[in-house]
Length: 119
Image (cartoon, rainbow, N blue to C red; front, side, top):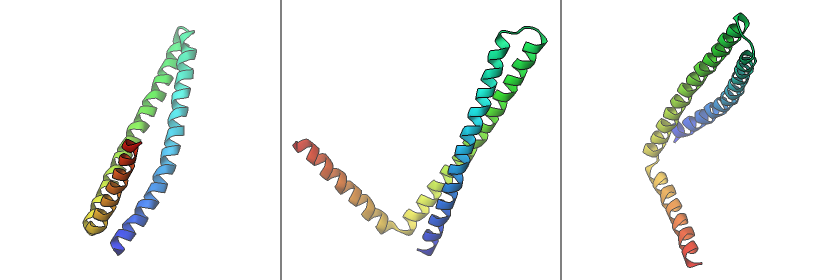
């Protein structure tokens, strides 16, 4: 029981940290893509060396955005694995509580679905 409470607290702390990182990552990626789009749009009307420089900078920004997206995707996958492990530990530590919760949800769904058919 104590281990479950401790893991729940740790999961909540990680969740808040993850939410902050996700929001930051989203704004970073949007800014990078917006900058790259602006550079590539500006480069369409230009020719020569200046256009090539803008295109290469735009591609560099897009590559950085993709790199960040891949890194954040890896972090999200790791977080998903941690949550799945925590859920598995909880179910193993509290089988009767988990069974009671599942039964309660099943009964609630059964009542709601049967009401919908009667009307």
